[in-house]
Image (cartoon, rainbow, N blue to C red):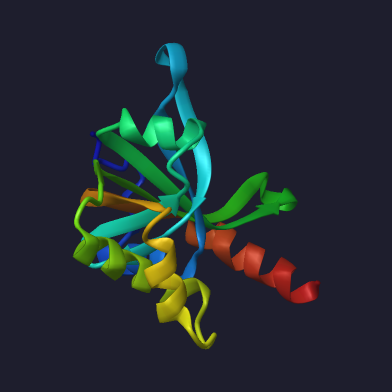
Length: 168
């Protein structure tokens, strides 16, 4: 896994990377698809400590692909805004590398489902009843974070992008 970023002025700190993961709800994970093809699929997620949790049904192509993937990468685009005058993109993104594992124990599965519920169903009563019910028919996977990098546009592009967004 590559960790070097050529343009050092664009590197985000680990804390900034974590903040991006925490405020976003969708990312794209690379899985082992059929016939040697990489299958990239958008997924809902939650970061909890050094893991990123995903959930889904136990049947289907995504589930099959999760089961045959161990090492993977996951990407979240926090922002992407074209600045035509500079022929550039005001972007901010994070890439995570790590090992993917199916959550097998009920305790860890419930912990992951609670974290997902807190992120996606905040303020909705009876989350615990739904968690207890869904643990029977939902699979949960964890991406154990080994490395993460973040990158953003150069300052000139960020400032120009901010001015354009304020005009809208």
